[in-house]
Image (cartoon, rainbow, N blue to C red; front, side):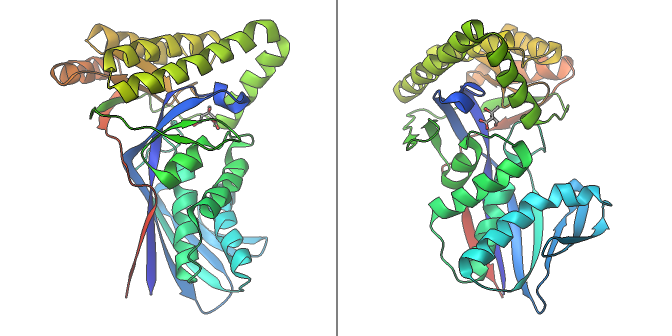
Amino acid sequence: MRVTASAPGKAILCGEHACVFGEPAVAMAINLRAKASAKLRKDELVHIVAKDIGASGYFEGKEFKSEVGGMEARLKLEPIQFAVEEVLRSARKVAGINLEVQSDIPIAVGLGSSAAVAVASATAASELLGLKMKKEDICSIAFRSERIVHINPSGIDNIISTYGGAILFRKGTEFLRLRIPVEFPLIVGDTRISRSTGEMVSFVKESKEKYPDVVEPILRSIGQLSERAAKALEKGNLEEFGEFMNINHELLSAIGVSNEFLDRLTHVARKAGALGAKLTGAGGGGCIIALALPDKVNSVMKAIEREGGSPFIVRKDDEGVRCWSEG
Ligand code: MEV
């Protein structure tokens, strides 16, 4: 029997970085997914194939044998292996698993690919072993897997990928589901520059320690914006939400996580008629998101492309992780 699970990527609509320090943030699951397929093996190895990241190999406990991608493959596959091992530990089972991972979510550009892979992998392994783990346990495994990748994540990515929809998140508290009465396409502008979330988060932490009187009020303002952005979305007031996106981008820029490319993309998107545009995720590369009414979507996409970005449209995905089996 083969069990497959898929989990969505995400876009942070407001509040990234500030949420690491306990401020609220708004996130939305997007209709790009990571998929993990699991099958039992006759031995006790965990064999992982992740073609998208050019890595495959076997884990036997802590030992790793690379097949594709050399020893770098170990770093790429370890968070996935961790998720599978945690499931095996919960099952109190010694078993071997073949796991194949594939993702539509661009990697390391702020759209939550690593969390989606961890959520899908833990779910596929758990269903394969007949565990029927609760979503909250899957989410917690994915969070710990994310710590291997991002060092000090807030937990927003694994939550949105597990549960789907749109949420108001605050670290250490129950998240709030947002009911948004309007459908809207979100335009993503990918710089195709990958960067490390962990390093960007450490950079903000260092600035906060160096200039607490300056950086802390900015992070608090971002938190206030997230509260307002959540209310604007629940009222279906996209114009107001767009204004908050713009302010959020400039505040993120003030704490040093934007760059010239991201700034240019947000400016051309606004000039082409977007209601709002901001970087999304950790910044320093990665993507911007822009919100536009239907008659402006094409011109915003063209403007992003002219500026050297790679534009595509994503929509809200209300379904979190899902799972099915074959054979
Ligand atoms: C990453 O998607 C968003 C950050 O706020 C980090 C985090 O919340 O874990 C930059």
